[in-house]
Length: 85
Image (cartoon, helix red, strand yellow):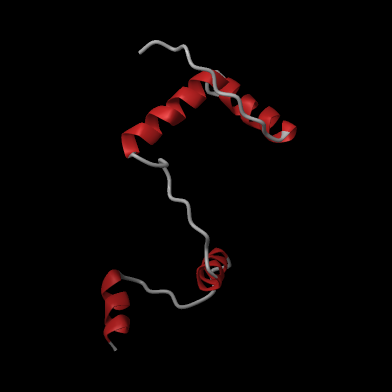
């Protein structure tokens, strides 16, 4: 596939600097990264990752998990026993 189209994008300078350092660290140019992203969009027929707006319940559950708040189980069987009660 010949590369003859130009993409122009405007982004935050700090974001650009930080992301381009990551590209350098993994041995990738910004052009290669954009081409990879475009190829993945084509392959997935959409964005190659989930785009979600988390609701309050999900955010609360994630925070509780990080803080190790809530019920714990020693086995999957114990978890299912609790769910079936």
